Image (cartoon, rainbow, N blue to C red; front, side, top):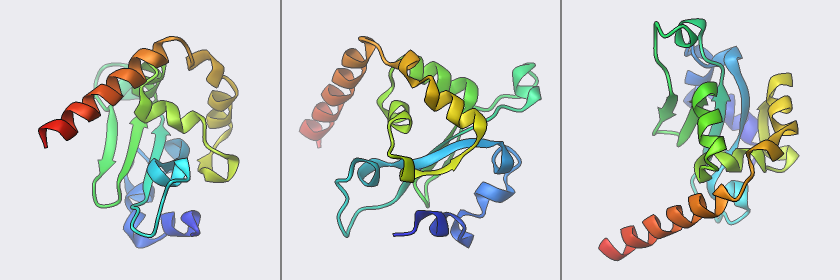
Length: 144
């Protein structure tokens, strides 16, 4: 599947028209089963990304943490939020740093710099984060 072509479709116009996204996106790639190589013909397509905060966010005049589009399973994190989550080895964000090169759909120089320093975010904290995530998923399945 040509994911870049899909991303250019009308369904993903919000990527180009939302003032917090567009040229402010520094990194975008695949998420979920397509990122892991476990996808099948019924798998949905998940995109994950990082966008720069507006100056007004940095000054505390506005607030923005992430943009979610449930129709396309797209989540784009604000830079400040994603750094906090990466430092916690959050499973939903750390995966963005480990994609294969062809799985990145947008990668600016700043996005590449973040990838070049991904080792700064990997720590023993990952065991706790991923273990907690797995336990929560198990409880969710048991309660379903």
